[in-house]
Length: 402
Ligand code: PMP
Image (cartoon, rainbow, N blue to C red; front, side, top):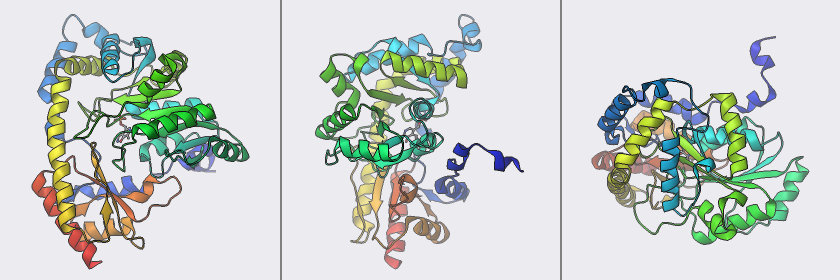
């Protein structure tokens, strides 16, 4: 028997994604990439981090920075997050916060703590691919989350039971979702809170892009709406996952979870078992830089990404054939494009890489049921306006040819 034959059953659900395989091809020189959902490295506050890391290793804090630390996370950073959460209508204390190694780790832990094999997770069709990858390890069944209230809790519960488990959570990004760029309005959020309340399940609010709003009115986070209903966080079902990855730096791997204390206490045990704690020096530097420049820096990011979004929308208007449609996102990094039904996003990508050197992500990988073949995700975060224009013009030309 080979070792691959004795992997645990959960390992069969851990598959390399089509996307990751395709992204390996992105090193070609001259390629215009709308593929990566990543921040523009030119906008990293690198000099501020250089100072903050040097300070963290200074005589007063070096022992703390280099020593083992508590699993909950660096207290000044947790306190800073308490202040930020208050600003968005989420009163809480440091005891409601766990620092994680990016919000990706939070998604893994939440899968681990809630899902027994065969339990149901409600996710959008499509949803964030990395969430599916994190949850897959815990062998769930997926059901389609429709946030407009037109499917009743009983129907979800019954199907979950028939499949031998129960609905444990609904997962979504309510603001500028990856991959659709869509934002759920307040009514949709209220109806989602009704649904999770009726099901008695958790609601995982992935707030990765929440700070990156370019226009329109901010909609209160699900957790803040639930706190408004219930009076305080301790009886809330919503578990909020935040991250510095889209604002200050993804490479330092600092994210956080905000939830009722019993949830945080359990997640702390998982963190202890998994990696003890997130790197203290990274948390210290993140705290120092956040405290110094967060609001101003986010404003700079908004201005830069807003222009790129507008450039991409204008180019799509100008160059796309009439049978292609897309959504206008109010923030985030993505524009979700629907091709004619008979077209396939993955085939288009292969063709596009070969003939015009433009990359993007085919949509199918974001669908838990494998549908969505005629969709693609375009990211505008890492290209300048002229590159965006050129890339979309080429893509429009290729689509017309096909
Ligand atoms: N959630 C969403 C919706 C994302 O797009 C990403 C990053 N692509 C993450 C979570 C994970 O981010 P991180 O672990 O860097 O915080």
